Amino acid sequence: MENSTVLVVNRTRGTLVGVEVTRADSFIARMWGLYGRRIILGDGVWLVPCNSIHTIGMKYEIDVIFLDRAGRVLRILECLRPGRLTWWVRRAYSTLELPAGAVQSSETRAGDELEFIATSSIFPSAETLGAGASLQRQAAGPGSVRGEDGGP
Image (cartoon, rainbow, N blue to C red; front, side, top):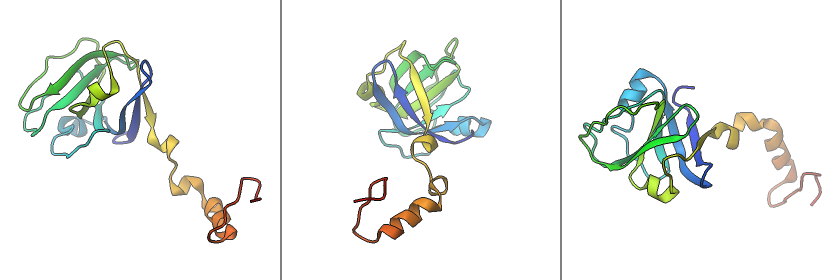
């Protein structure tokens, strides 16, 4: 599942933490994290496994969320400045690196449960939809809309 994109939902608070978070589960991907990327609110990197991070070489502040295996938030670091190292977090299995402000906007707190949902299961690709859907749209013709039963 290396470098797949996930949606991160705070199940405790009913908020979105990230909508385009890349899972990094190889040594090289985890080492790079957010380094060298331009990110906006909603983006991020989920480092698996990971129990400490650094911001050496980064040019902007980030929010960091340390999680246990069940997705429970163990520790949060908001607006971590560039050039910093974190201590390892006991029982942390993975870490979310997010743009500064993501924790505040999602109202995430220690103890909250986060869920990671593969975006491919939410937004199917054209290949997943298959040719049948495009043929059905072509048969309807331009400007016409049909219901599931084929009627107007």
